[in-house]
Every structure is written in structure tokens, then in C-alpha cells.
Length: 198
Image (cartoon, rainbow, N blue to C red; front, side):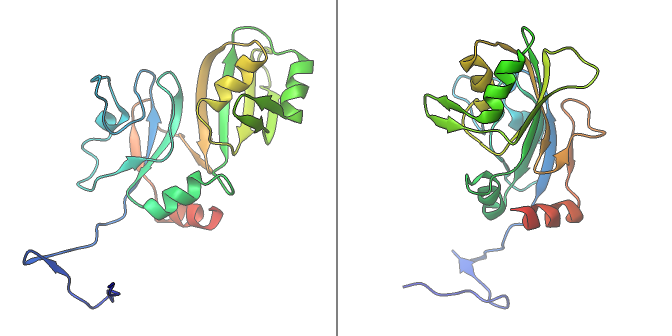
């Protein structure tokens, strides 16, 4: 049998009052060499080390960036918002700055625009373009898909190696004024914006 708890109710467990945890929202500019997990049995460096002193609440990364990928990574203890941001139907918009081992041919750029068939199903991007004032190895790509290593796999599928991968935006949040390895709390305005978007 369940019982709904109202805002004025006092809940106790083993004679101690149970309090709801404050919601925390944090943004990290992830450096290279850290894995996105809360615990690693192989004792490799994790992103949790970078935000360990941020708050008393237990926070978790929203989604993943692989070890060699840098950029915007959000943390929260708001499971409902995290689930919305990661859900395939309305997943968060992600923008990446990609550097390839060789210039991307126009024909291959067009193939990516049209959508590719990978081993785990079709993948489409929202936008892809050469980065202005750079050579054709520098690509900007925007997508909502959140599958494992998806950006790297898109280019590998066409025979390109990703030399550098940096997530510059996650659901409208950017790493502006954040050096690599630095973090900041989100403003209430940014949190409201995320809730409206998801």
C-alpha cells in the first residue's frame, strides 16, 4: 500500500526526519583523459574527481563523453530532468567541433546530411558544415542522437579518423568563460530554460 506525502507532512525513518535533497545543476568543461562514470573498477581518472568538492548532494553526469572527448558535460541529482534530456524522442541538442585526420570530401558531407545506416541502425544529424575560416578537416555537427560514440562512429563509417572532438553546446548550455577542468552551477534561469526545452 502506498501513501502520498503532502508538503506539510513529516516523514521519519528509524526516528530520523527524512528530508528531500536540494536539486543541484552543474556544468563542467571536461578535459581529455577523464572517463564519464561515477566509479571505475580500473581506478582510471573519472569526471567525478573534477566536481568532488562542488556540493554535499550526490550528483551524476547527464549522458557521457568518452575519455578523449572534451567539452560541455552537465551534472545533476534531478533524475526527472536528466531522463528528459537523454530521452531519444526529445533528447538534448548537442553541437560538436570535430577535427578529422584528413579533409572531409563534399560527397561524404552530403552522405552524412542525408543520413547513414550504422551497425546499430540509421542515424541522422540536424546540421553539418565546414567550420568557417578553417580547412576542410574542421567540421561543426549538430545532432540530438545520444548513442554511444555516435559522432566518432559517423566519421569512422566513411573512413575518417576523429583527431579531436569537443562538445561546445549541450541543450543550449555552452562552456563560455569556463577553462578546461573548471565547473560552475547553472543559474535558475538556465534550469528553467532546460525544463522548458525538454
